[in-house]
Amino acid sequence: MNDTICAIGTLVGESSINLIRISGNKSIEIVNKIFDKDLTKKESHTITYGFIVDEKEKIDEVLVSVFKSPRSFTTEDIVEINTHGGKAPVKKIMELLLNNGARLAEPGEFLKRAFLNGRIDLIEAESVSDMINAKTESARKMSMKGIDKEISNRINSLREILLSLIANIEVNIDYPEYEDAVIVTKELINEKNIEIKNKIEELIDSSNNGLIVKNGLNVAIVGKPNVGKSSILNSLLGEEKAIVTDIKGTTRDIVEGNILINGIDVYLYDTAGIRETDELVESIGIEKSISKIKESDLVLFVLDSSSNFDYEDKKVLDNIKNKKVLVIYNKIDLGNKKVKELEKYDSLNISAKNKNCVEIIKQKIFEMFNLDDISNSDFTYISNVRQISLLKKCLKISEDIENEIKKDIPIDLMEINIKLLWETLGEITGNVYKEELLDEIFSKFCLGK
View 1 (cartoon, rainbow, N blue to C red):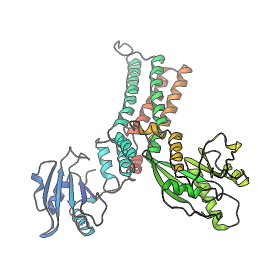
View 2 (view 1 turned 180 degrees about the vertical axis):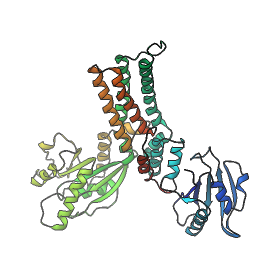
View 3 (view 1 turned 90 degrees about the horizontal axis):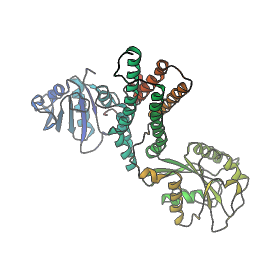
View 4 (view 1 turned 135 degrees about the horizontal axis):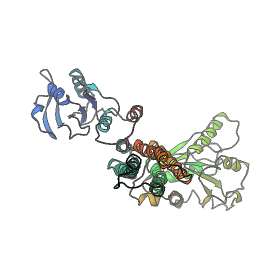
């Protein structure tokens, strides 16, 4: 933390501008050695035009921004060099910075310094990662809620309730004669614990929506050969992505594409027809189909509604029984045979030849995943796996406190779990952390972040 780091903050290639970022207590001094203007006299948050130089040779025409501590992203002195986007000038400027006392930043080190210096918390840092990777407007909005501290504020409000409770328990134990202290009873603990538990459950429940916004939906299109899976995929995508023939086993590998439904990414996977076969390539494709079913959020089980439900259809059903399923009775123009074994699942009657089938399927997916609730929400969701895991741990601790109240455990012993709950909530925001955890989180970022 006492040294000065540098990294390229943009993708290097043939572009108009690239950005090089330098952070640390010697950042201004180091850049000053290779810039033809005196940066030491510049005010914070100013931009200076000039040239990067190597002794007397001009390297590139640049704009240099200065952000002085503590009013910067890392709270350290930061200098940003806007240089031309070719590989050669960027490489040369980085070489000069390293030769003059800076070192190459580790992945995510700028963010890590911002966290360690109290500029951001872990939820904000992870939300920055989500913002970088956001592919949809919904994902962008959700990421912004984390960056804007809305999630952090919810967690911190729960910690404040617990901290007040812990403080009063300590006073009651150590200074029983102190009359102004709140007397902590089991009724009060129960009241506060129920309030916290309910809010934790709300965050966990809504995290399902958060994961949908962040990761999208994986939809596997399955069925025996020649029921119209590839035709349905092509219709949904609006292009001839999959080959369609009357020959059984045409689809040997996973064919995929994605669409947007109300701002949510939906990834579609056309799978090989599931049946028994001795043909090696087709059997490999079927194995991939079964694997894709396991990964999917929704299975479109396609049937030929003009044919009887046979052994091959049952074989498909055996592989999807534990999944969320939408039964698609295709070729409804040729027949309308329903299957009693499938009555418990949502179903649609369509003909892949009819263009209306696209909107019918989209609308059904929209309804099955309550995408209307997501699109009309304020997007204050937790979608990070680490955060969700810790919330579930908090819920378990809250339930333990609930059981201790029922068992009439002494309050001074109950305080152990109350403190544990407070600390575990602190792990979500980073108020409580282990160094190894930080290394793991920030190593996932790019070098210039």
